[in-house]
Length: 119
Image 1 (cartoon, one colour):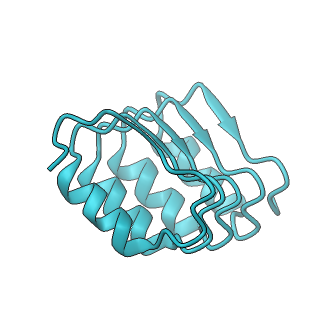
Image 2 (image 1 turned 90 degrees about the vertical axis):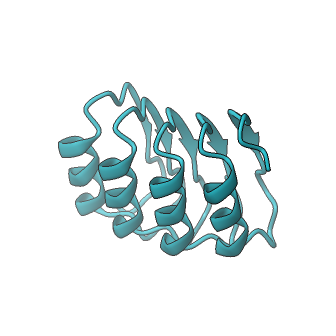
Image 3 (image 1 turned 180 degrees about the vertical axis):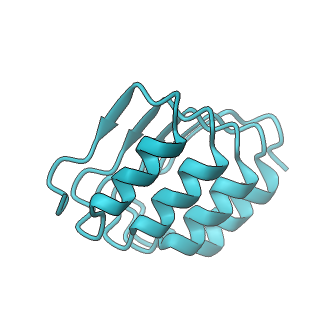
């Protein structure tokens, strides 16, 4: 496995799915930075797996992952206490509730980009 992997960029991989994220979550527990922008097959289920398996995340970019929801943001905020940078640009299913979860739980967040969301 890739147990020592700390940075992973797999943006714009249209066929990346939750199954792939579940494997990353299982085999990359040291992951600090993950960029999966534009991965249209990613759903809250995959992000929940990442949140639970990669709880050392500090940077996450899920921009243009159109299936991302408030539920996913809540899971990330709850499990990834060290999250400092988060981007969910153009995630149309993200609402005020997702931002509330981040505001309440992600106390180390220093950079947040939710441009073009429905907030």
